[in-house]
Image 1 (cartoon, rainbow, N blue to C red):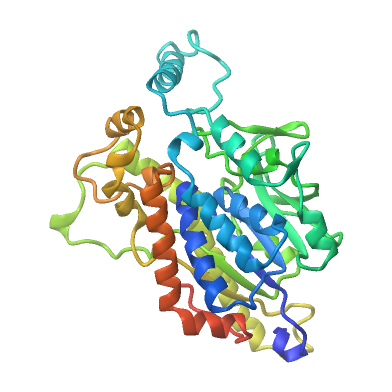
Image 2 (cartoon, one colour; image 1 turned 120 degrees about the horizontal axis):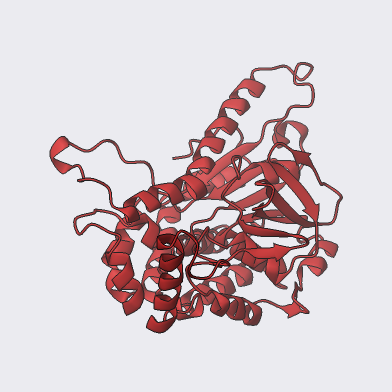
Length: 390
């Protein structure tokens, strides 16, 4: 059932997907909405990968939604690559040599315990200073739950041992579940949970939670909207940093044989972003079916309205244009994996945390959201039914 049919207030959920540095685009979308629709504040927050960082900050902030979004924007604008991972030439060369020796020697040489291609301790230190912390636990979430400002927060990780997705939930109600590849755990949110959810596969090291090693939550999350559904959402606003898929290009414009960087970009898009599109399409199809049933025939099924915000431009192309700003060592190794004539740099767009690029993503998020103002406002204020995800 839709909320309007029951005359009950909607449970608004905000779903923030992954994508590394691309998550700055989410901040731009939220910044426009906070200004243009000031009474909007989601009761349910879920985040994956870099989206988990945004979700936790918003859930923990002790103040208005507008202040929470503004502070989050300032955090992103204060970032640079050196605050995310160690970029010194010596450190990167040593890690490349360890991986290379291990591979070329068939495992006989080099370190057997390879923990990420880069050292992301700077990100841990940055987040520890930016978020309210006490003994590793994120403060403010419990207070917002008690005051009714927030109903639940969930961030997702991947258990590398079992291969299953885990939703770490901090909420005021016992709403845990275990279905398919997704299991929910009740928790007090910590910095380790954030670091685990945002640990890009192979690029960042995994993090130990309880008795298992966990990494980026997008790896096995085949239904990115499902955590919000399990938590009781009746209206979901999702923000994806992936642009609308491009139609096939004419023959004379197609690329030569794909480079390792291009293949990595396609894989990362498949892991972090494509499943959100599929899940939203499926949700809209189910809504259409449920809407055709009588109340007696629905047997507990309800309509959950979904809207997906996304960039109108390819963020990979923008990253390629701003490659010159990357640290010298990173730029050197990245060029070795990329063709000179590639039109997009999807993999690079997830790990380039330079201020100019992040500010551009935030601005684009604001502009794209402003262009859909009427549609977004109608949706957030209660318009029901299936909403085109593009």
